[in-house]
Image: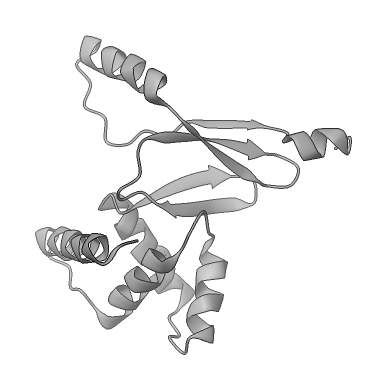
Length: 149
């Protein structure tokens, strides 16, 4: 993530928290900084281990709550999959879906340009105001299929 994008995310998060009457604590800032360094999908436990290794211990409860706030703010996306929730940076990423392997847990991203246009039609036709969109397709990746899992 580029410096300008990081600054924009920090600003978005501060504004989000202020609008809800919440404070930007040192712990929340540390979590946001660590999240902005992440690439790909991650789980809460991975983040907690990384933060402890960097001498930034934060309770798991604070991490869980902060990740939920970051998701509500539009900075993160939450993916509910086998083995628990995973997160990814949503800021600056185009709309995409996920293929999730039920055997090994691998997540493969794919573009949704055509599907996005269809979703917009459906939303408009039904006068619906979407707050989030998430397409998950569960199955078996090519490697697991070959292994007969």
